[in-house]
Every structure is written in structure tokens, then in C-alpha cells.
Amino acid sequence: MREIVFDTETTGFTFGEDRMVEIGCVELVNRVETGRTFHAYFHPERTMPPGAQAIHGLSDAFLSDKPLFHALAEELVAFIGDAPLVAHNASFDFGFLNGELGRCGRDPICMTRMIDTLAIAKQRHPGAKLTLDALCSRFGVDRSHRVLHGALLDAQLLAQVYVELMGGRQIGLSLVSDLVADAQPATVAAPRIARPARHFAPSDAELAAHAAFLTRVKNPIWGAAASG
Image 1 (cartoon, rainbow, N blue to C red):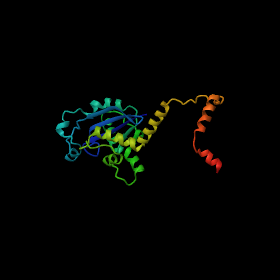
Image 2 (image 1 turned 30 degrees about the horizontal axis):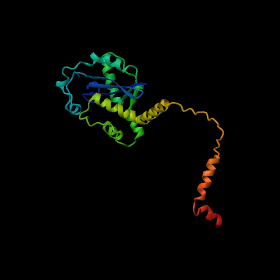
Image 3 (image 1 turned 180 degrees about the vertical axis):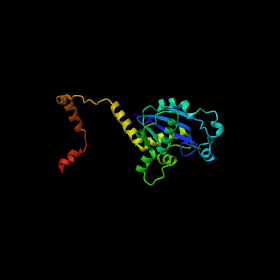
Image 4 (image 1 turned 30 degrees about the vertical axis):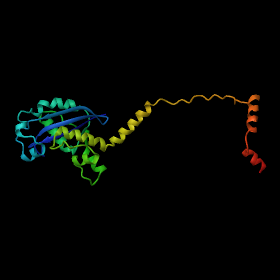
């Protein structure tokens, strides 16, 4: 089963007046990272609000030479393919991704392909803090290198969180144990061969030697027992 975990960075919260400036995608196959990723920055065709820049650190100067979304749309769509798409608060990311696809005349991605880790986390951990940082702390995912938001880094962290939300460690352990069990050779019991009992009768010489030894034993305990 192939899935794509992705995250976006934007100029704000509402597509139209706001635009996507970064996307990061991580490929999972059977909930294991394959190492294949897609990452790109885009020129938003507008200025970056200071509040948004404070979150992700992407300035007008940095984005000034980046391509427009439509220049990489085909490559992005090819990477995504027909896989389900996993995101945290996924309706936000889907809104910007489909908004950008629509602007360049491409079909939107069907919402039935959306997997929202925020919704899953709310069901599994009601009442808990469910930000990406909080979920990383809950599941022991190292986020020490996350100073600012970044689409690819956040997608990589979310991929680990998603696997944990879906019971990944337990699944992995069971698979490993199954593989180890399968690798063990079958034990075949060797047939038991019945052999007749062996008798070791003492020879005449051994009986004579034993009798001579007994004559030299002083105050034998068997004699005391017999006299008692």
C-alpha cells in the first residue's frame, strides 16, 4: 500500500489572497518510508506577510527566484500518483494544493483520498494537545532539529507520527517476530530405537576379589546393622 504524507507552507490561511510557497512529500509503502521525497519552493506572486514569515522563515528575497507552481505541477502530480494523501489538519493543505492545481487548469485531488492525522489523533487521544510538536513528544519522535516550520521536515516528522497513530511499532514488532519464526528450521524428532537391556554379570575373579576385600573390612556398618 502506497501513501504520501505531505505538508505545505503558505502566505496565510485563505487560498486566493494567500498562496502556497512550499510543499514537502514523503512516500510510504506499507507504512514504511522508502526514502523517496518531493520538495519544492514556489514564488507566491505576492509579498510575504511578516506573521507568516515568522512561522516558516521564507522571505520575499528567498522566494524571488523560485518557480511558479505551474512549472512543477506535472512533476508533483506524477509523484503523488493515485496514492492516499496524509496531512495534519488535512483540509487546510488540501485546500491550498487543490487551489494551486485549479489555478493552472488541473483537476483537483479527490477528497476521498484525504487522511487527516489530526482527526485520527482526536479519536485516539481525546482532550490531549494534538499539535505536531505535541504528538512528536507523545510518541518519542525526535524533533530537536525543528526550529521553524518547514514542509519537508514536517512531512517527515508527520510520517513517523502517522505510523505510530496507526499502531506502527506494534505492527512492526509482530512482523519481525513472524519473520524470525518463519526463518527457523522445522524441528524433526529422530525416531527412537528400542534396544534390549544389557546385563553385566561379575566374573568369578571379580567375585573372589570382592570377597577377599570384605574380609579386610573392620567393624562394617552392615555388620552393626545386622547385629542390631
